[in-house]
Image (cartoon, rainbow, N blue to C red; front, top):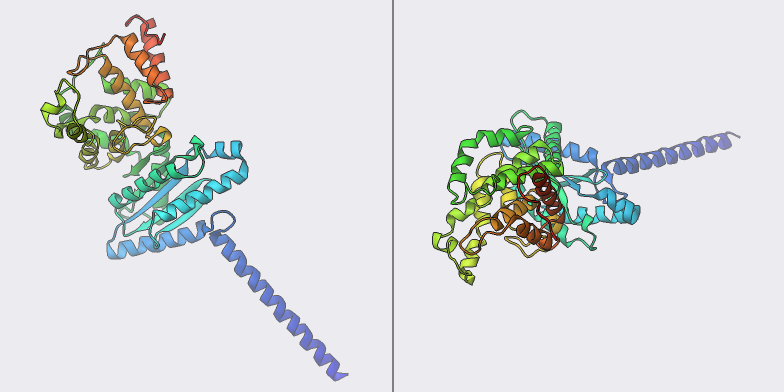
Length: 397
């Protein structure tokens, strides 16, 4: 009888140990599930990312090393789920996770924050290095599978660790920069430097911006009282962009050709077609302009708009042959404003055209050279100005 009791107790103890082991295993699995976005992308989850962020902030402060965070959001992701279904949306999330991983280092931490938003932790990386990573990621969106336009771009916010900035504050800063990039129409990035920095940075550099602008031979060119900057501002406001985005675009419009200061005057003034060597020199001027402007703190977004202000909607522009939604929205606006006023001006290689002729050229170039939405907005602006008595109505017919 005694043996049976002992055996029963031992069996209960064995079952209890087994139950405890099962509970421990479940707790371990639950912990893993909480720390990893295992269902869709298999990336570390938010909890693991925040823990690593705290460690990297502590390490960066201790050794006085740079630390940068990226916040990325897929442009038009809601349309992916609506048009393609949840399965297509999940597939896109996996593709984006793989793209980010391919363009970052092994010791960089990638996380899906939720929805279509990702975060990237870049230890030992200053803003310049983060910009290179960002450009590679944005360029990589053009190679994602599928022809759908809504699958080809993202907005990215960049924030570098500041003095006395808590880990959570650094992540918030990156997300604020992301919101700024989204306000520019997407397919671009913005760098955070202390909050809503666009107007402050531009105001801080106002005198230098004016000096750079004065270096342009056609800086004062205007037609019917319009300059590239004033027309670009009208377009941005009519489209409904926020004040910071309008400020960025207006400044970029003032400086979009500043890189031409490095092009020999005889090339710029040449009345006939350029040869291959001369054309290669001219095609570098947006890159020169970007470098000049990017040297001013807080002007990274303006610099990016300038770099891509000669791209074409069909991908035939320069310097990077971007197409469609890959081109920053601000660059598309500057291109249309500049092209319209260039056609209305007397140039060494082209006589001035009437408002109606210039408008017809823009409409003909929509979806080939120009963003059709921006062209449509400009036609509306010109028609409204004509109705108010500024000039005869410009029509595309």
